[in-house]
Length: 106
Image (cartoon, rainbow, N blue to C red; front, side, top):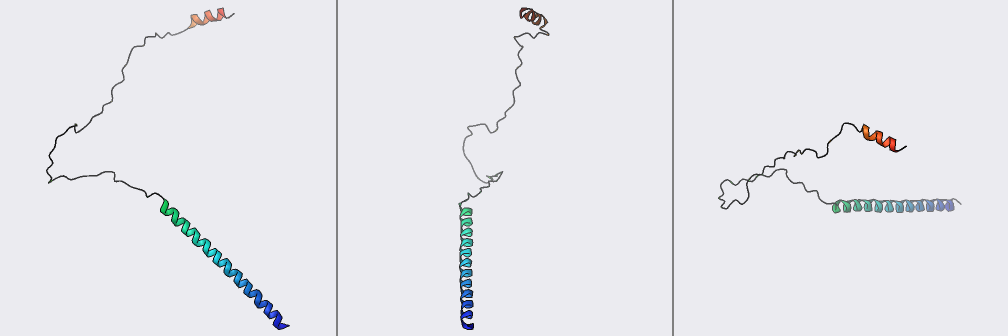
């Protein structure tokens, strides 16, 4: 009897170890798939291009022949707003018209 119980116990232990091994393999595959997916997304992202704010070119020692076609500097000045006299005269009150309308509306 002891040998049968021991065999069953050994079989259960082996099944448990196989089950845990399968779970470990599935977990490892899922982990590797997640890493591969994140690396693929990182590669697919657009690289960020940063341009310098100011570029200086040194032409000293060079002989440049040519002709200037445009002025070297532009100046933009803000023009003052034109002020025109209004063609419509502003009145201080409309008392007369309000009385007329009140009388006509009755």
